[in-house]
Image (cartoon, rainbow, N blue to C red; front, side, top):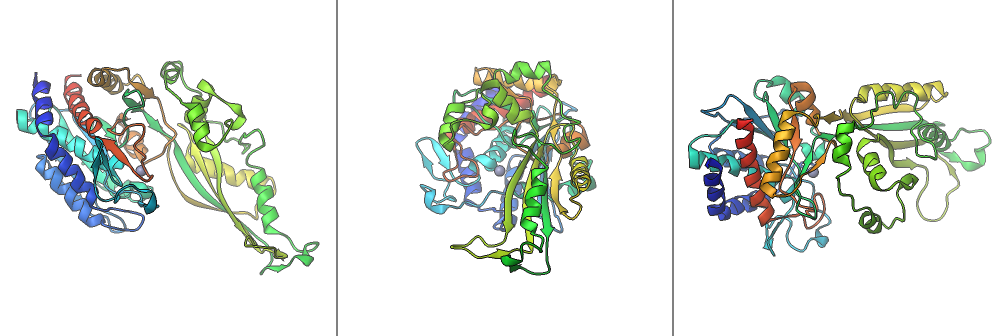
Length: 452
Ligand SMILES: [Zn+2]
């Protein structure tokens, strides 16, 4: 009954919601370049106030401010926290956009603009769900908190100290994460976890300067040295051979498998799109989905050494470097993997290779049988009138572990994007229909969470 009134309010105020989203999209907020950050944080705070939240801007000496908002329920002790980010990726390449990336242009039922799917659409839809309850019932079904940070797209380097300092503000019983949407068949997607990441740089050094390659019989070549070291990390069967690397890796549980089997995977389209005839090790179907979600990886991101310009240069370089990332799965710890990498190279005689860590995030997962997860699955299936697609974990990464592992509550990712939303790419968009439906979904989650 309550929810029907809330839904009617959402339908009646659609245009205002869209206008607010367009306003937020028109404000650039590129964290990689520090563009429009303060201005965007202010708009988010203003929108929180309009939705009836009390707000606080948490300044961060070295980073971008975190915008915090909350509203207390008169009828429930439970608290639901929303994690979002107001920063966006750079819009380039501009020539591939069919409109100005900061226009918020509406075409054929879609709103276009940088950040509209990742993550401004979700910010607005969530605030509007709260506003709809406040305006129609004078209350919210549960206590609501919003944490909207401004550095997600650059790896959230300052969120951990902010949470450490304001632990009480971030306490909750459950959280909704920033991303999600519907698949090609309009089924709602629910993500329950993220991989961790460990980024490292390996450096090899040779002589004190580059020398003529005629000296190669006598002078060590750091480029070869680095290639040999990298060769000890992974074999040609694509297996990571760092000693102890897989110690904590777990296969999906029987419960998880029931959901994984139902995940749609359009592998032929995917291969065609990338100009490939097969995936690594020729995996396909269920095996490919399992690999994507449950296999940790070791990826060379780039090499830099010697001469790579036009023509030839008979030079023997004096240094070489490579950047790598490890995507980690639940129970693997970045600091443990870094230690194992160091020991592995040292034991194989590569203690001359310098290893520099460029930061990490932990893998994270909320169990599928958690009651909040089961509530949201039921809510999703009712709102969308379709079976939900549940990812027990996902291939992406983010600071979710700070909430799930540190603060200790379940975290679920759902949102209002769709299969062609093109996050991080030109012509990023969401549909007007998906935006409004996503707002109702959040309203229904608030209601069902209070009753659960
Ligand atoms: Zn993003």
